[in-house]
Amino acid sequence: MVKLHTPLCDRLGIRLPIIQAPMASASTAELVVAVSKAGALGSLGCAYTQPETMQRDAEAVRAHTHLPFNVNLFASIAPGEVGTAAQRGALDAVTGYYRELGLPHPEPVCAPYAPDLETQLRAVEAIRPAVFTFHLGELPQSRVRRLQSQGVRVGAGATCVAEAERLEALGVDFIVAQGAEAGGHRGTYLRDPYDSMTGTFALVRLIVRKVKTPVVAAGGIMDGAGIAAALALGAQAAQLGTAFLPSPESGVSRVHKDSVLAAREDTTLITEKFSGKPARGLVNRFVREMRDAPQLPFPAQNVLTGKLRAASAKAGNADFVSMWAGQAVALSRALPAADLVAALEAETLECLDRLAALRR
Image 1 (tube, one colour):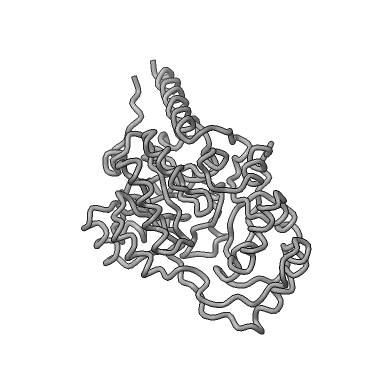
Image 2 (spheres, one colour):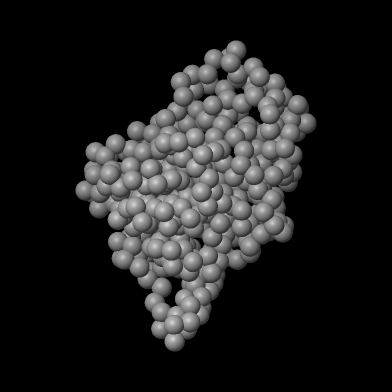
C-alpha cells in the first residue's frame, strides 16, 4: 500500500505532506488547531498582526494541541511616509465607495502602515513555533540561522527559479513554489511580479531540478489529485489555501465564503487595488471599476481600503471585499477543516494507488 509521507513530513513533525496556507484573513487559531490535529500543518498568517496578538494566537493554539504549527510573516520592506498631497488621487478614487456604504470621507493614511517587522520577528523567537515561513521578500541569513538554532524549521516562498536559488543560499529548510494560480498576494521580490506568472506544476518542476532543498507546491491545488500530481513532480508537500476558506473555522467573512462556494469556474483576477501589491482574488465591482484608478504603495493602500472592506463584509455586500482565492476556486467544498484534511488524504492515496496500478 502506498504511504502518504515524505522526508519533509519528518523534518516538520507532521503526518501528512499537506500545509494549510497562512492566510492573514482566514487563519484563526481554531483553523490551525483543527488542521494540525488532523495530521497536516496548520498555519497562522500574521502579516498584519501586532506582536502581542501573535503571541496570544499562538497561546490559543497551544491550549488545544502541542502539535507543530507554522507562523508566517511578510518580509517586504515598508515604504516611507506617503505625503498627503501624494495620496489625493487614491483618496478621490475611493471616496464615492465610502459614501455609498455610509462611511465618513476617507482621510489620508499615516505611517506606520503595518506592524514593525523586527518586532514581529522577536515575537516569533518568543513563540518558537515548530515552523516559521516568510513571504514577499527575504530575511538576513543571520536571522534564518538564529531561528534554526532555536529548533524552528524555516521556509519561504519563491515564484521563480532565481528566488528559489536565493532562498537555498540563505539556508532555508524548504521552499514554497508559488505558482500563478495561487490566491492572495504574489510573493515575487526579485523580478516584476507580472514576469513571474509560471504555473504551479511547471514552476515546481523547474525548481526541483535546480535546488536540493525540499520544495512545497502551492497554487491551484484543491483536492487529492492535485496533491498527488505535485508529489509526482517532485514536491515533498502541497500547500492549500483556498480549499480551507469555506470551512467553519476559517476567519473570512460569510460573503467571502459564499462567493467562493458559488464559483463555477475561474472567476479570479490579479489586482493591486486592495493592498498596493498584486494579489489574486474573485472579481467584484471594486476590482473592475478600480482597474485604472490611482493607488498608494503597499501596504498604505491596504490601510486606505481597510474600512471599506470591513464595512462591505459586515453588510454582506461582496462589492468591496478583497476575496482572495486561487484559480481552482470552483473546486471548493464546505467541509470542517479536519474533514477536509481526511478527504484530501483519502483522495491522494486513491490517486497514488491508481498510478501505482499502471506499473503492474
